[in-house]
Length: 283
Image (cartoon, rainbow, N blue to C red; front, side, top):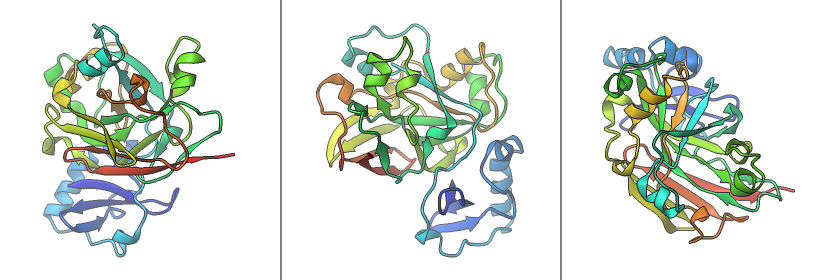
C-alpha cells in the first residue's frame, strides 16, 4: 500500500495505490496531513480497501506526483548517522544523535525541479530514509516501543547548501538546509508494517553516475533509537517527519563536484520508490 498526493502544487488529491490501481481517498480525508495521521489514517485506509469502499482515481497516471504528506509541524534531521559517512567526513562517530531542523516550506515533490539561487555554489544531494510519525511520541520508554509510534516510511532527498551550512553557518547546520524545495519527499509513504527499516539499500546518482550505494544496516542510531533518544527532549506529533541521515558518497567528501545547472539527481531507497530532479539555477 502506497499513500500518495497527486495533482498540481497546492491542489494535490490524496490517494492510495495498491499494485497498479490508484484509489481516491477524498471520501476519507481532505489531505494527507497531521490530522490524517492523528485520526489513524493508515488504519482507516486499510479498512476501506478491505471493505471495497474506495473507487479508482480517474487519470491518476497523468497527474503530477506531489510530496505524499503536507504541513508537518516539524522536520527533524539526524546528521552523521552512517559510520562510513562519518569516516568520509573525517569525524568521529557521534555518541548521541546530532540533529538539525528543516522548515516545512522545504518540502517538494519527488520530480519537482531543484531551483537554486545563483549564490548556491555548493549544493549537495543526500539520499535518506524518512520516518513519518503516527502517534505522539514523548519520553518513549525504549527503542522497541518507539517503533509503535511510526506510521510509515518515505524516501527523502535532504538537499544541502554547504557554503551556508559550514562557511556561513553561525555555528549550526540548519541555515544550509532550508532553501525552498530542499526536502523532496516521495513518491509515496509505505506503512511501517510493510517495511523493515534495518537493512534497506540506498542509492543516489548524478547524471547517471552512482554517487551513494549503501544500506541502513550502516546506521549508527536505528530508527527506534533515534525516536527513543530524541523523545526524551522533544515531543513528536502525528505527521512529523524524521530524516535519519545519509551514507557516504556526497559532494562534501571532495570526491565529486557540487550540483550545477542542468544536472540530473536521482535517488532511491529499496521498497520506497525513486526520485528524479533536474537542477535549475534561477536568476
